[in-house]
Image 1 (tube, rainbow, N blue to C red):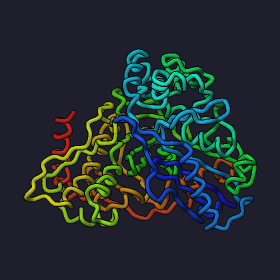
Image 2 (image 1 turned 180 degrees about the vertical axis):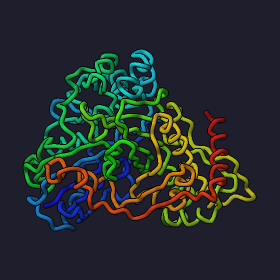
Image 3 (image 1 turned 90 degrees about the horizontal axis):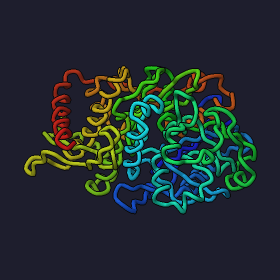
Length: 494
């Protein structure tokens, strides 16, 4: 018996097949091998064609099925996770009306700021746990004002994972977790926010049926079964945005537990059991995967847009002579803590929530042509990302998060010993690395959704811890000196 996990990222789509009883990964693949195209027609814009997600899902899926040799009838559940906050619009025939406005697109910031003031800051924060900000609801408001001819054709709105579920089943649904990440959910009244849709003029008919995060949400249609080589009727039994799902992948379900990722963007995500929020809305609070109105489980999310994308930019534009990120990490390791006085502020990927939606761009400070080398710049970039994490984690601590242990998958920036050690030492937290990723987590969660696993403890019993990183207490003064210098540069910018 097997379970499939689909992870719809902005860089690639990953597909994973696990054997349900053991939790063992049987096959895993991603597509494309180079990063998916993000279109920026204007500064601050970011769009992708949802059809590209489906095309790459099919390619990765085909490779997984071929490698595994598993029969379609032995796949008993499908889980889906996705890049959060994207907006997909379809007409009554399920045709896409425009490219998806994805998470790092900042065009909707003014719409969210206006809604925050006009609905009322206290009401937004106490009911939505966030300001409307640059999230899905505000993106839809932008479409309404700037593309009215498209807005008039809308039958349903979706998030990226809902689109994939629609392609698999022909049915459109959305979870409470998805509604909350779009800033459509009223936590006090446990319903779609009348304040938000009333302010923006969004018809309630745009919203699809609410489906459970875990459970039989839909089943694979005959046409999708033929297209993918699956069995018609295979259950789609789980869906969640990438950050709640990444926390799930690390077995983070309960209050006080912390997860982190460091891909294109970087996240620290902690679970709370009460309706808390940052009064400046610099960190976000969404429904966690196990949230119900009866059992409050909220994910407090710190997002740094300029994380792995900075490392990627350096690789493709600066360190072109180095063949891999491993080579970059090795060269960076030759530079000392603090990068010889060099600081990089990494906020170059759109408006940053942690900076109250300011768009500052990335900047380098203190460069000296006589002493600094390529390795110093590469290290300063990683340290700058770490310092942006710590800056945001202080906000999380102020609303009740106790950050003592950070769980992370052994992937992306966490593959770098410099990044791991710097983060542990600056935050004074132990980092635990696990052999998992979002697609694996979605596959395990699909097993929970069909009832194969009794609970999360059983689903994640085989989760393997592969490393523990402790703070370097004897070097913390050096880390803190570099962090203080970095904060000084950031203060000058903002």
